[in-house]
Amino acid sequence: MPHGSLTLPARLHLLAWDTATGEAAGAAPLVRAGALAELAQRGLLLDDDGIATPADLDAFTDDPVLDGLLELVRESRPHRWRDWVTLHARVTADAVRQQLTADGYLGTERRRVLGVFPAADHVLRRADVVRALREEARRTLAGPLTAVSAREAAATALAAAAALPTPVAPAGGDGHAESCRRRVEELAERSGVAGIVRELCAALRTTAVAAAGH
Image (tube, rainbow, N blue to C red):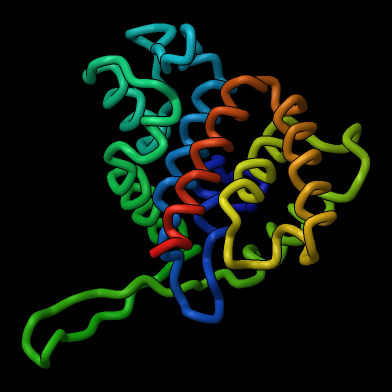
């Protein structure tokens, strides 16, 4: 499957993959934010005064990850976008990991814990795709906005807001950080669902700060 056809949550899971540690630790909020953004871009989730609201109780995407989240939102009491970034986020992240494994982007290696209990680790099979996605993200952060699609804009804005431990955002001091933040705002506008992406980015920044404090 060409990486251009990846959904936002799948793309962000791969962007979050740390090739140094061999895992995507802490990626669940980012993956969930990507799924929320894609459902909003498809018109299946709408914003109702800050509340993520299903647009149509009978519409589906035919993607199991996105449809699983859509069902969860429909069956739950109303929540703000920020709340949905972390609420049961592991469910979406696990579903994306299974999807990426089925499509050959990830693989599994079996092992035994304490030499007795069976377990399986996920390993990256398509490092070339991760490199390509990172390069796209860097170009999106630095290049002309007219060349950026709504999907690329949303993916890069969310990845930058999440402060991934991977080389997506440019390194540097306060000036670079402020420049990156302005670019994220521009990308949010470019995404087609600006208010929603801004809310998701704000939630990811809060989550990243909290994680860094532990």
